[in-house]
Structure formats: C-alpha cells, structure tokens
Image (cartoon, rainbow, N blue to C red; front, side, top):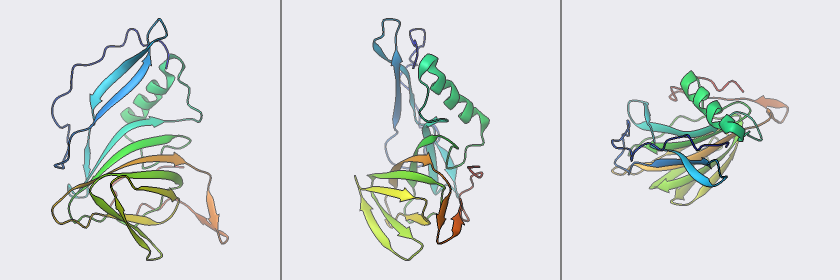
Length: 199
C-alpha cells in the first residue's frame, strides 16, 4: 500500500453487521504505511455479513484482489477491492484475482454440490464440517483442518444439530480445467444465490 498517513482508523466497531450465527464477530485489520514508511493500520472494521439460503448460510468477504501479483502502490489494491465490493456482482471467484471469504453454516445445513473454476484453501475455524465430493467420498474436517479444493465438485455439511460452523476460504482464479477431454467450468449448484463468477 502507498502512503496511508491521511487515512483514519475508524473507532472500534460495534454491532454484528448482519451476522446470523452465535459465533463471535470477526474483525478485519488492513495495514499500510505512513509518510515515514512505518507500518500502520489503514482500516479496521467488523466483518459485514450477507445471508443466503433462508438464513442458513452467511458470507463475509474480507478482501479481494483483481490482478496477480497485486499492486500495493498508492493503495491501488484497496481501491480495486472497494470497486469490486461496490459493484455488487462478485461471484464466488474474482476473475484474475483472489477472494478472502468467511462462511458460517447453520446447524444441520448442507450447501448444494458445486464447483468453482479456482484453487481454494478452506480452513475450519469453528465446529466441524464434512467435505463431501461428487464421487461419494466424504471427510470430517475439524477446527484447524485445511481443504485444498482444486476445481472439484464438492459440498460442505454441518452435521451438528445445535452448533454453527465457520470456515475461512481463499479462492484464487485458475486456468480452465480439462479432465478426460471434458472442460470443467463453474457449477454453482442449486442454492448458492450468487451470480456467476465470469471466469
């Protein structure tokens, strides 16, 4: 990031900003530099949440990039992120870039089977989540476990009947994938409520 000496850090945020779950609110700290080249907090805010699928699923996008490698000079990456969020058309993946997204899953919730054209890192932060693949393979992921999703058909299932679960994802656009001569593209399934990623 460029010179952030004129940026103001907002006061300590309050409220849940649309959070549905009983899990703790999360906070984002974006760093930068002051005029002396010292590291400072550029912005600090609560995660802002958006509900999907009859309030059984909540997303919060903490940050995006729109090119690789990103340009941090003069806060170009911050401006690009702000444009993406203001545009209202972000799918699961940001073409040519990345998305840092937190997802809360209600007790008993199973998202639809889906595939993104992306390389994703998914980390369980709270609870337990089953990773189910279209082959029928299923694995129970607990707090701290990591899934590296390589453009595969999958779904996430919170089998707890009482507790919310939470995962953090980093989604990175990837080149189109061909398996056995078939081109595999994005498949959002039946209940994402999201626009196509367009990559």
